[in-house]
Length: 283
Image 1 (tube, rainbow, N blue to C red):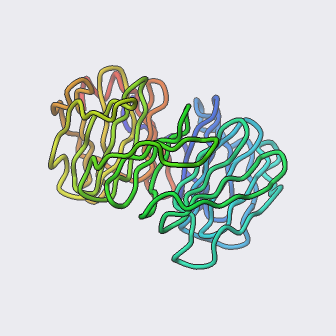
Image 2 (tube, helix red, strand yellow):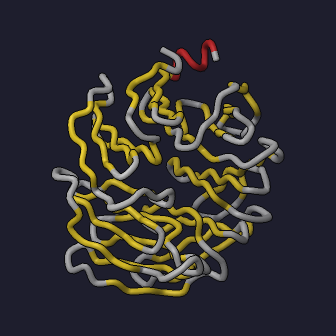
């Protein structure tokens, strides 16, 4: 199974994520739930009053947290109705860049170095200034691991929301992160990738000029790391141990991600899926 059409929706798919055996898609003004194994649409709801290209979301056990420019929505995962809304900024200088969550809080980075922490139980918002430049991406674990516009990798203490370690891994725009045990893989707009020890921040391996234009991580599968460059229309596969190049696949769109043995992709109104065993074997 390679590049199999799973489902086609009426409107372009903006974002796609998976929780359990359900795919959650933003398509136009709607959230749509789709069975990941069959492509059957099981629920859809017009959540938003108008179309927007700024929406991005994370899925918690009971709620979806979705950014929309300066707004953050809490959406009930069962009903797809908005439960709560927070206005965390006012304009292009204060819009929401990245989202994360843990058992207690939702975390939202704000352009130009702001950082909002929303208590899930009370809805209380606290805002901190923790970076000299915008944080593009974050991973929530025992610490908050983040990458910013300056190419720095940040380790943020959750109780105090203070940067306890940081290192300039790239020359600019650290925009994509993947956590694998004690290692974090980082990707930058300087077109390089790095393998970083999350505890010491030592760079274990790196590779420059990975693509000719902007790219991101689709994820890790077995011994391989996948990068996707939509402007180049290509996907590249790397050996995760030393970041040596393995092979190219001439296909690449925004929003691709790996879950289990499956690669999910968005292309316009359509969601595609590929079995990675088949993709690696044939490409």
